[in-house]
Length: 136
Image (cartoon, rainbow, N blue to C red; front, side, top):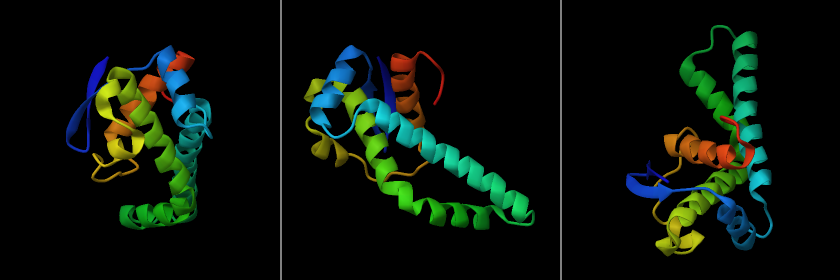
């Protein structure tokens, strides 16, 4: 078990076989591996798009790059946010079943930025638990 900061609040997180079972119970339409894939595809797309834009427009500023990537990635944002919040919730739930239901837990998240550090920490914990490898 470890502690992480999510939107200014400290949570315990953990991941084990219970995590997998509870994920299926709470999120019937998605399995945790489908959500790993959504996150992996989203981050890969961002990296590839950045490389492509820099190649096509070597003079592009960082602000312009972020704006173009954000604009392009908007169509994938719903699935990404759902995936990261479900994984974040289930890792918190594994550590502490008293945190309440998913929708109530979401009320603790004042904002979600695609590059929030907690997303990386939670995802790495879960991927390492189930896949035995670093990162996604």
